Image 1 (cartoon, protein in one colour):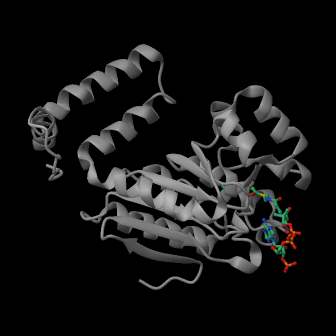
Image 2 (cartoon, rainbow, N blue to C red):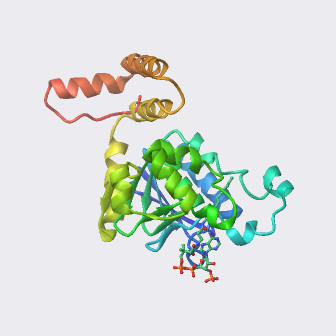
Image 3 (cartoon, rainbow, N blue to C red):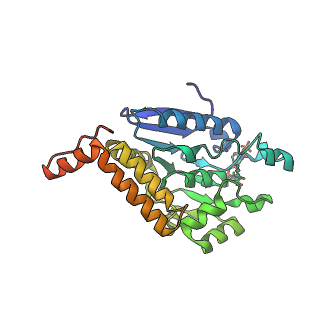
Length: 259
Ligand code: CO8
């Protein structure tokens, strides 16, 4: 598959790495890029060998938002019909394998929203997050007003959405937006390391864990706990549960077959 706005590679035959690649536009997200991203995500998701996906950008920008030039002359009808934007922004939500965002530089607007759609964010110490759409006379349009408050609470989310200010990596970690912050030159290794760890676990258990954590954002506590309980019970039907527990009992390393 050949792409122009992203680069795709595999690591150790079990991690899919997607790099956003419109460096001159700071990886501004246009239709072409989002179409390519959606396709690459689906290909990795359906590849039996791949256990985890890393989504990253350049040192200067994960993504500086949706492409403002492409949107500037939109009418309401253009925006609403979604022929140009939004047709492919939800693809990442349908991916069942874990997707880690490895963020350095700017993650603004749609770039911040894209990072938040991933399962967790590892940030370089130069990362800057923000929802600056207010400065353009609009508001976030890909989940920013919904996911940001869930990640950092109402006060900070309001602050970011209303003033358009950026949050640096230290504040982002302190606020719970990112799971880890590492020096810029360690970012790719850190993200890849996490992805390799995940890839060696039972794929079924990994997918179930992702599904269950995501359920926490869609349901009340008792429904969510019941959902988790049922998945927990179901995992006793897998060979990987037998392998994982037998390996622990017999003090050996588990080798999961994803069955
Ligand atoms: N879109 C298009 N081009 C961009 C964007 C963008 N979002 N961001 C940067 N660029 C371009 C610049 O125009 C510039 O191009 P050129 O060299 O041809 O002039 C190049 O990238 C480099 O940018 P700068 O010269 O501005 O670089 P600086 O280091 O001075 O500044 C910033 C970097 C702070 C990131 C600055 O570029 C900036 O503020 N960018 C815009 C950030 C922004 O407002 N993002 C939000 C966009 S709106 C949005 O994302 C809504 C998403 C809704 C999705 C809905 C889907 C359903």
